[in-house]
Length: 189
Image (tube, rainbow, N blue to C red):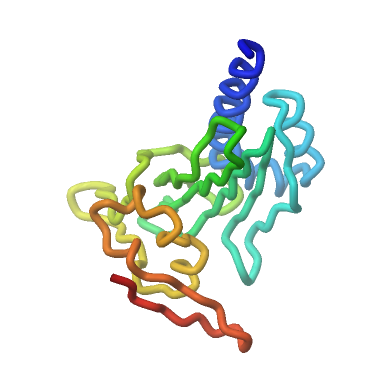
């Protein structure tokens, strides 16, 4: 029983560390050395798996990575990018879903990053377990999360993680993709 608890906590901590590495280094590693290098790093360093191929700079995602271990899945998404001066500022989320025996709970984590290149290393500027609607870059620039983008709302699935959107109405908006690929927003009470 003691060993089981140890491995639960180890898996949870390993996935947290791996997700931070993916946000900071995933795009750069993928662009320079491919998915095999990411897979190897995740297994060797944290014992977690890349469970689907990464999507980087596609028509669908700026970046999407999925990692898992012991009944816990992390979907890591780069949802938005804004250029200010020579830097790119990005909003990332990590959606965590888990089976009951894993010791983890379903939740979302939020990050704002800065990089000087689409394929460069990211610096995490701030993170939170609550939705980050905006980030002040400097006295003249603030980046705003695009709360009216139905595709981004569909990817976020805020209605499934309401405790991470306490001060946002996004938890009351369900985004449903119809058969024709259009996304319909349903406002819930």
